[in-house]
Amino acid sequence: MNNDQAQQAPSPRALFTASLVATGVALVVLFGAILPAEFGYDPFRIGQLLGINGLSKGDEQPLEAQLLPHRSDVVEFYLEPFQSVEYKYTMDLNAPMVFSWNADGELYYDMHAEPAGLGVEYAESFEQGTAVARTGAYYAPFAGIHGWFWENRSGRDIEVRLYTSGFYDHSTVFSGSVEYDREIEPLIPDFPEPDL
Amino acid sequence: MTGNRQRPARTGLLISLVLLFVGSTALAHSIANDDANFVLGVDGPAVLPFIYLGAKHMVTGYDHLLFLVGVIFFLYRPRHVVQYVTLFALGHSITLLTGVLANWQVNAYLIDAVIGLSIVYKAFENLGGFRILPFQPDTRVAVFVFGLFHGLGLATKLQEYELADNGLITNIISFNIGVELGQILALSAIFIFLSAWRTSSSYLRHAFTTNTALMTGGFLLAGYQLAAFFLMPSYL
Image (cartoon, rainbow over all chains, first blue to last red; front, top):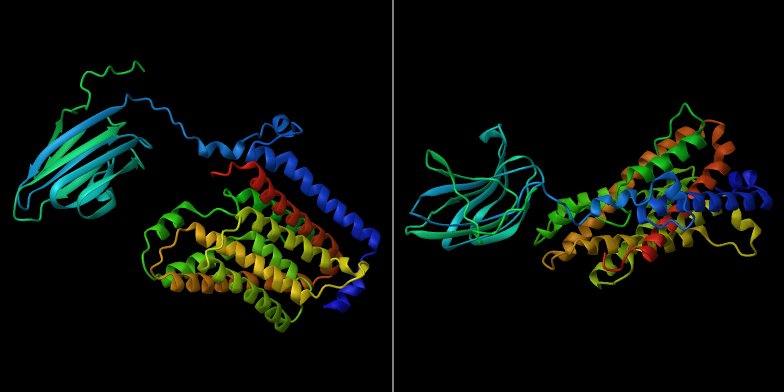
């Protein structure tokens, strides 16, 4: 390698210039673009001038205001042997919900969602398995109905309790071939809804 | 290295450098969320997924790629490429394996800053910079030592995955194999690109500019990581 390198070897002066240019360009790009945009650090007010301050920090926003009032819901029901049921909430894209459910016996469950107006064949499942309890936080990946399918595969009655809190507007139950909207039962029934 | 062949090559390289920067939405040091979630769910040996993650890290890791461009810039024979890259692979395998197994807690930003400076070093050497210094560092030793640092960087990335103890060794070795596979893939692409460019007279004419650009890229990466080290709150 050294032959070719030697032929092309630049003078110390050119080398000095190259190093200076490399350092200079890097400093200009760092202080003029990367530091203001990525880290909101703008000692020379260049980022402010270019309007790029904090450009790439936007996705770390911890607060996300919502347009719907916040709701909570408590459900208790029994599943007979080999009976199954689905509880679903109507939620908008990105709407958050926290939930816990537990049962006094093991159930098969499937947490899933169906996009609004598209029906069962577009359903997306997020978690399936058998458990006596699950808890978690959920962000609706699309507008539609979101919730759980539970099936009692044991030989005795199992009691199920579901607690949720989040941004949904109504609750639908699918039981056998029957489908109906149920009244949401808030944890604090007389909590005033904000005027949004 | 997807320089547009219609343009002068140095412009192509500069554009590639800029695109690499703009195109990366995450810090070089962070790992994709989906991958992290996947690994979190793994308990036990998972050979192919970790090979994939290792290869992905290498192919999408522009800091490693720029260093490799610097290393093979003046290597014309595949035999030499293999020799240097073996030294580099040996170096980074040692620290990757021991770093994860011994659970070394090294700051990823500082390691990535050193990796950025390794690009500066190699570009400076390609410019013939060390001829004017009283001592002549051995390129092979330098590539091996920087391999050790690149391996530390890989180890910090792998540690961010919160690996389960079950199947740990299998998974690290799989990740390492993936890194080598990804490196072979990326190197082949870089070598083909450089070999094609070498047939044109612009190669040597622009060698000076290209290595200056490479040095700039190294300074940028180092500055970026140092900024993250000093400016990001420590709890992030």
